[in-house]
Image (tube, rainbow, N blue to C red; front, side, top):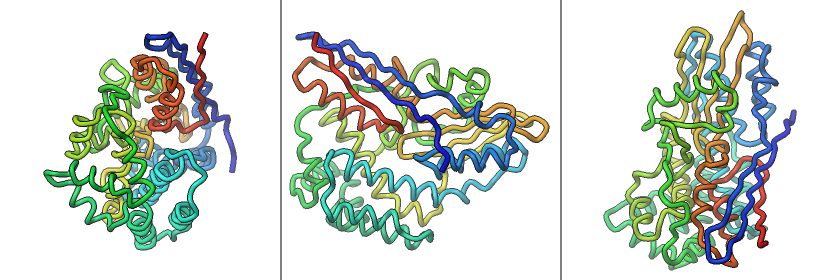
Length: 365
């Protein structure tokens, strides 16, 4: 597989005793799509996108093919990509919930469950079977359909609290440790799901990216930065609303949104994953595509001239969430002082899940 310099997210905190910290976020990521893809034929560009990106590769390839087709005036069927994109989303969510969040090597049964999910066959039946097994045996301790029905009712938060306090699975135990109020991120503006967001804002983002390459590194909507990810897509869910009202919009709310999405994925896989991807051609020779990923909304935008790529831009979830002055930086600036500041900051960064290496450094001077 061809690799590209992925960069790194540097999160610096200056502790000030008894006060909130000074915060600086620096990204060494570069908007390389233009340099790598300009001048290529559409077919070669689609191939390169599939080879260049190690994370969310299915989503990246889908966005590329959809945007290219839209620019060429031959709208591709977005449902053709839905199975692969949703299966990839399931693997990413499961990995975060089982390994990255607890920051452990992984219990043998957890590693085996992830292995089965990653090695599941390509058919919908095989993927949903592996996912059902992961959910019922490893994550929830009961069938996902039954669990969802219980936590989606009027007493959903009471049921969820009872589930996490029973600690029937390692994941339930982790949720059980989230006690007390967690203001965490505060109430940051959240990007909604692709279906709820609609076409106009996505097209606007794509056109702004084409007009200004720097926009890809500091994307905006309605004049401000936004957070993208599972919480934004699930922000209207009754259980998420109840959790946020009771415990705050912190790390727990974001992990809960991941779990809800993962629990619903078997049904979405069987339903062809409607509205997981879409593409538009706002002008002749111009294509904009959007795909839902585990980390948030991924947008590709391009122009074709004489059958070759003239401009190519990618607006990735990491740039929404980790840009200087963006959602994570604003949340960290509101954190109270304490000896656990670095630990809290790492948990918050992990909850937002950058697609590149990252680190948190605290200066106590």
